Amino acid sequence: MNDRTSRDDMMEMVALYALGVLPREEAALVAAFLANDESARAEYFDLRASADALAYSAEEPVDSARSARMKERLLARVRNEPPTGSIARRRIGLNAGWLWAASLATAASILLAISSSVQVSSLQGRLSQASARNGSLSTQVTQAQRESQRDRQMLTDLVSRDARRYEVPQGAVVVRGDRVYFALSKLPALPKGKVYQAWTLPKGAKAVQPSLTFSPNADGVAVVALPVDASKVGAVAVSVEPEGGSKSPTTTPTFVRPIS
Amino acid sequence: MDPGVRMMERVRARDVSAFESLYDAYHRLVFGIGLRMLGDPSMAEDLTQTVFMKIWTAPEAFRGGSFVAWVSRVARNRALDVLRSRAVHPEIAFPADLPLEGALDDDVLAGLDAQRVRDALATLPTEQRGLIELGFFGGVTHQELARRTQTPLGTVKTRIRSGLRRLRETLGEGVSR
Image (cartoon, rainbow over all chains, first blue to last red; front, side):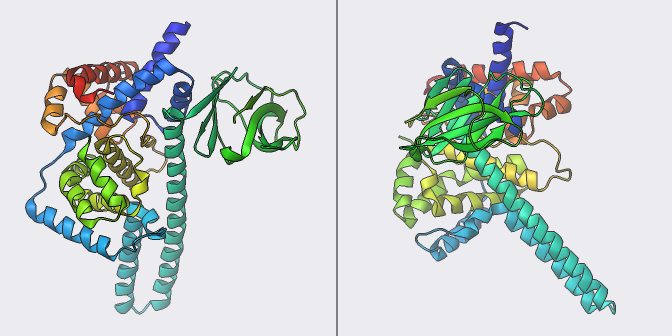
């Protein structure tokens, strides 16, 4: 496969990304590609304009009774909402609301059974199990929502026009707001037992601090969100380290990039 | 300027009447996206409630650009959350969420309406249109698109790219950046 074909392939992936039909891992890879290619970003913005326009075609007349009911319900909630501040409830969103509705339905059906059965203890056991299962599902939902929010933020940041991009030989370091990402696409494969490790140099410091370790995929691509506040970091670096990471770099850095 | 942008400025100032106007102007769009993606009016209604409550409780999440595009992406992402949560087989791959910003300038989409977009879609070859609509509203990945339409994956990619480009040309200045 030559470079031209490879780029055409990637541009088709960009179209899929603009339409929003790529699974998480491939979406991150395309975002990394876009972070490093200005002309690809230009086409992406064009194609996403088309995808955005598609939403218009979904507009549906809502029958007046439903519309009025929805509005009444919404405004009642709005008027009861505290004027400011964080509202943890709102983070739970639709999934968890439905999950709890399902939980309540389960609990209600079990309670009905209790009233009509002599096997109370057995049903109580089932209720406990249902509660435990619901607790576990709720935790999973919360975790999935956090991951989803993090992914959404990362995908937004990597292609954003107002992101700062710092080129490195293997791709780019992308900074947006207080967030820092590596969008690397030319990382050589490493021997078994070795990983890439990120390092950060706090502003005013003389020694780097260890950050996370990562490995590229088979194509040499890695997208990494660094767990640091960009405003406090003067430079980032990557080196090859033993699996599990090191407390200080043990090899010559793959790159060092000031970001302030 | 997108009228939603002006309304959002007032919503940020906790103006309930502006929020009401925003709802009046955009609830059909949000409800329609929910209905197309979830296939159930009650679920679409819940989704509409969730999206508008998010707008009221976290108006800062809208950081400018086209309000229509933003609220559409919020609705689509929410609908994807619902589809994921009700998946019988959690290992099924779902599309990643759409980025919420970064693509468009203030006046984008301002000249469009539902009929104009439907007319533009109608100009696409059936096979391109079908893939694009199923991809956008179906909440499925490109592999699933290929499977459902029994089309080779490479053909799916090419048709989607060609279709989106052609749609962009047909809509013309209405989606200028």
